[in-house]
Image (tube, rainbow over all chains, first blue to last red; front, side):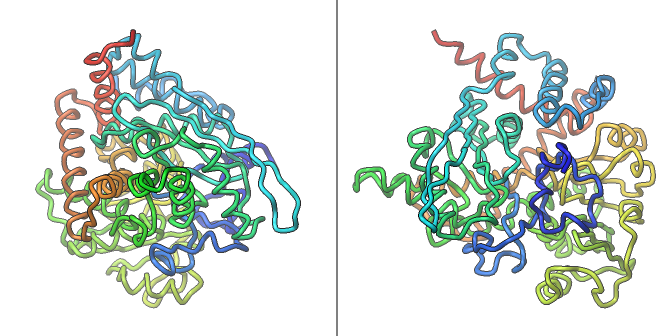
Length: 62
Length: 433
């Protein structure tokens, strides 16, 4: 993995290989489509029961 | 000289510089544009506090792992530090410093009584169980100790953290206090679950803010939003809610792009129907009935009046800027327009509502959650949205007025106001001793 990608949130996103939004994954530090590869329930949004879109993980809300 | 022109002039190979250099360069240009007092510039060019914590946590298998956590407090001239906590393997001190500095400008522009901060843990949360994540979060909160606090530094959710994470932090922090003091420390974090002091409507605050900035731009131009065509990149919390509120005003969503692909219908796509469709389609917008697919390189060139990049940075570039047909770009995402693209767009007469104004609804929502807890109140959704509306309207009007007064673009005006407000606070208070 190159250093630029290592500095991008893309490197732990489930869409890393086939994301429609960007081919250049360098230094992406914020993305509303970001979804980590999940095996835990930290992505469970207790604010909205299923999360705003049900399937999605923590969103950048600041 | 506007921010864009000056940044363009100083353009360097940014990807090799990293985030901190970019933010510092942006500050340098903005400070010069404002004519910032040189002494105050020295203060704002550095962070107030940088905390790096190594802390141990026992894993489910009995082993102990050491984690690295960060909290950077950039500036608190206007009030307590405010900013998110992210869990990600790539975070380092420089990226946290950059994000903290950016929060200072954002809270200042929004007219909030806050400074800027950021933090997080260098961790890939997908590699840990939920019980491990809870212990990691609680141990980090304990290690932060009095470096955070409801009147000192107020974290919020960010990448890979959410309402649950904030509930753990609040509970841990409150547990360190005497029983009689606990309940008055609930606002140590924002973004909590609604049942634990969270704010009704916090989920839609950012997207609602995006919509409001578009609405106030249209009102100022005497342009009705009814039947205006918009495209939105990103159908998450920001893009979906912005589209939701625009549709209620009669505007038509004609194209959407998410991580799976892009779709369009020149007659309009129902925002709510698409939302329901994604819930049963693994989150994807693709193959939505009545839509046709769009090549990703064509998305921003589609015919529309309003373009809302609400996903990620560097999407509107010199390669597609000249093909953009929208007359307004509302930056729901952080940094979606490159410096080169912005120059092209401004020359074409396209208005850009800059990210630090456009997506500030989220931090404004955080402020109201904090205020609600602080006052011991529970606000209803309509009340919350009305309060966010007022704040966004005020911020938009200030940016508009500064833009007209100084004859500068909206982004330059936004930075102007943000930095000027902090400068004013320092001038009034002076420097101790």
